[in-house]
Image (cartoon, rainbow, N blue to C red; front, side):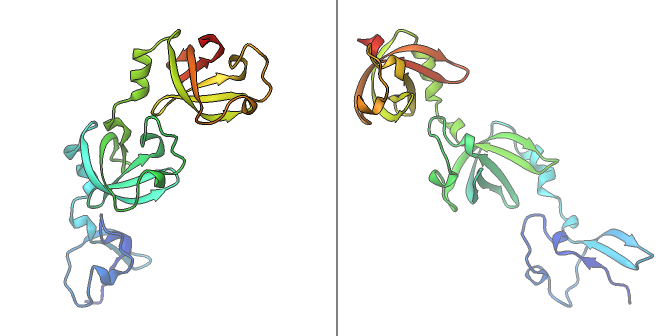
Length: 226
């Protein structure tokens, strides 16, 4: 009697984002809590409610392994990725670079929406810092790697011009696989402006003249295919 301790709102739940204590507790209610700090001089007693339950992050290493496939709901979309709920109180991040092998995603909202049910693979577990890295593209075949395995320098293919720049044209060989035809490889004649000679969606017969498996870049030539 006469001794009160404070349960700070941040010490009420491991999993819920408590905006007001009344969402968890009621006046007059008996609760079990843990003494976190005793300040004799300041006559303050800090208590914790969530500490009476195990922290779900402490159990992550025992429940999940890298490579496990999880099903979850997209909780939030940010500029750098999407947070997916793995279980109550545990969200994992799908970084923007792990959304697609081939698509150049500028905003994760192009691929996912808040509330979407998704399947992802666990890439990294850092329970100490409460971070879980997830990947969605890893559940799909890597078409770029397949292309590099099945094609080589000297192959002649037919593709479609998808972008024109002052230094050349990007040609889509297969869905999600593009190569660059440098302006010097467009014609036997000198070309100053590719847009004067070629158009987007135009079909082009090209020869592979360079393949960089590390950078995943493909160099093409129209004049070499003639």
